[in-house]
Length: 381
Image (tube, rainbow, N blue to C red):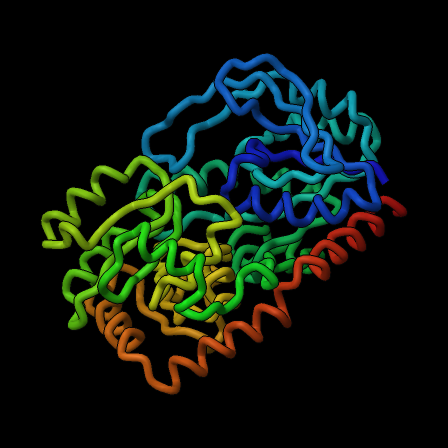
């Protein structure tokens, strides 16, 4: 089967959706011919092709357009429609309905192929007036038309489907959860050489609270800074991430008295990342909006005690294997951090249960197989 994947970013870009696509399509490319049509890695770089493993990648000439209020720039990619026609795949898989407009659907239909769409980003809610309203307006105008036209509809959580997919299309939608490489993300002893290297690199001499998220408003990191500053146990706060709020977060940390106890790190390789979760005493994801939360899966697989807001699809990921707080609830977040740092048998039990949950429900091989079954079924119809 010929599969053409449509997403504005792809490896080596390391966002959540891009990690999912790399894991899924590295597996599917062993059985199917896979092409990804994506944006160029650099602005205005000429359209060209390269390969990632068995995956052929078409990187289009792209203009990056920053729009105030949006967490990522809009990408004006040249030649999307032409690339769709040229590939003439059996099925096209859209993974970002905000970047691929209804004319892409027309091109797919024009070559007589099937269309799949995955809801990685559900309808925004609770981020901010501009983002929330903009997302709703877009879905009413274009997003829902794209979803309705799809032969295969999947969502990374039940919440993503129920909050985003029109009611008339929900019955034919499928939840396909994201996965985690639980072979790499696993518990290691505090004496592990590579865990110690992380601790020494970060200069840790206190308990560590870890966050891992793009540095944008929706991830709620300002509230995490405030909570750590108020916690009864003095702890270091380390956030892995990049984004437009970096300077603002450092200013907030200084204001809250966390100077010397707060740092943002980026450029962490995938091979290093598991050791950061093991160096942490607590992982926190205080998002205002979160369809799934890939970093949370990594923390749970690593048996790191975890705290998260009960928003979006988070409860579907974590179950009863961590502590929940309300969005923007600094005091609740502070109390949960204190509880997690105090240790105790229940915290250890939840961490072990989180690991078992990841192995049972979030195996990449099973997830890739489910996508393959859905796509093959659609191609036969």
